[in-house]
Length: 97
Image (cartoon, rainbow, N blue to C red; front, side, top):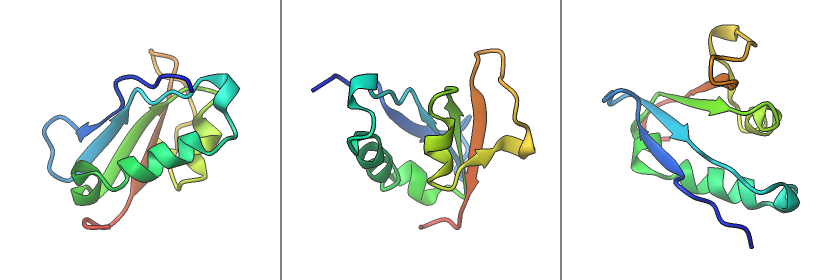
């Protein structure tokens, strides 16, 4: 099994209603085996996710469509890479879900 390091769900700049999922990586040889889905399902039970109404993910080019399957979409409808070469994705939901 590959190692996954420093997976975080944290508040977005101290906000109680916004959170961010950071540094989620699955080694390519483990893609398509359900590992990423398990990670997202686990993070979406985290207290920072549950209390938030907006969650942001800086997604790599290869991970963007994966996150979109979970309801994340391009932040403000902008489909451009940022200065870190990530797409900024976001998801809106009701707090407590």
